[in-house]
Length: 243
Ligand SMILES: Nc1ncnc2c1ncn2[C@@H]1O[C@H](COP(=O)(O)OP(=O)(O)OP(=O)(O)O)[C@@H](O)[C@H]1O
Image (cartoon, rainbow, N blue to C red; front, side, top):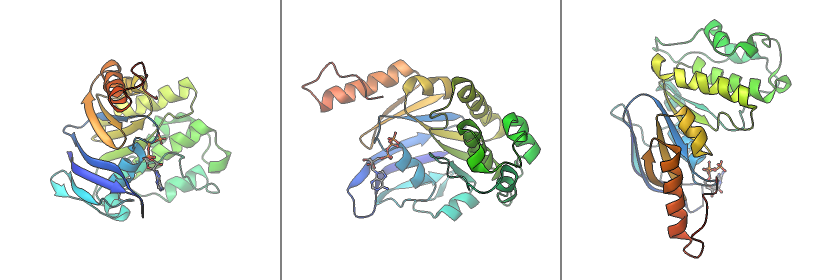
């Protein structure tokens, strides 16, 4: 469904942080992007969401060339970003977040607010609370619920379980794993291969803005990273991946 070819992305006035990156999400499912800090995971998700324009390369989504599109075009094409740091509206209540977020026009697969509250039960008791009054876990649930409210076909989730207690992280993982059955493909940036292996069908390994390969197990993902670090730092052959 998503085909990225030779993608080079830089921040304004900066050197490229993604270099000739080629990546395919061939089938609906949960896909992880794994790599050390600074690998370029967030940059890739923001490029797919239309927040950054590539310097070179192409992005095709379901056969359509969407390279360099704007965030509103991405949203209309049913691509939703659940960003790192959540970026909720602090003074709006949970109910107001839902009211302010409407399903993409023409999408039949929209979730009702009731369905989203069933998916994330803690939010049901917090409808009148402002976002800044929520716990970190509740904020993350609202971030994902708000993204789902737009009825995406591709959900970009940036570190969706970051900093959460294991039980809350498990709740979110379970939701993400159930999304492909509802027609949503998930691409989640995750810092650790072992977390990725519990969530995703496929793990795409990124380092220094380049795709090292894709795999299905944390062991193989760690091996790819370790080999990359050994090749780039021959003086430290015992180096462990920085993750
Ligand atoms: N707004 C920005 N302006 C300039 N450079 C940036 C900006 N955001 C990120 N970078 C740089 O781009 C590179 C990739 O960062 P990115 O945040 O995409 O990595 P990441 O894999 O998501 O890392 P992390 O796990 O730490 O979030 C890093 O070198 C970072 O310093």
